[in-house]
Length: 145
Image (tube, rainbow, N blue to C red; front, side):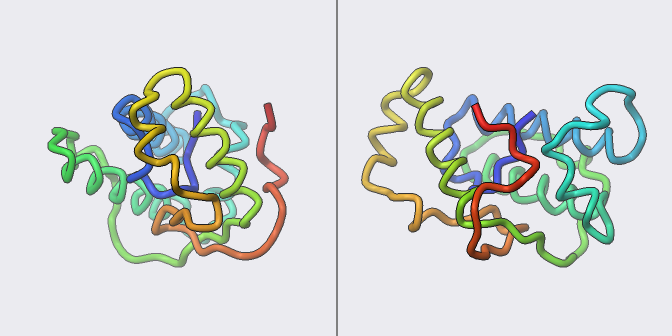
């Protein structure tokens, strides 16, 4: 499961679809509708939010908006809640790590997408709108590969 801190606009087609599916899974986990993935590290920051279901709903909403802009047909009805909520903090180090992680994935599965993003550097990358960037290293919950 990867709930990207970077904006969904940077994801390739496979990455965006995977993000949608994995975010829907995260929503199920946070709602107590599944037994698997309950201790997944990617869920830590959502669980720390005052309204985890709302936070994952906002997360899904922006993934949906990006998918719709690309002409994909994701089912908006699968998102449980969508009302404004407080942002979640994400560190600059986390964004840098995820940017490098995405580039490594794109080298393997979508070199053309990587070429489109080649000129961007980590400090210029926008976060997913749910997140507010603060200085810091990679998040403690991240599993570094």
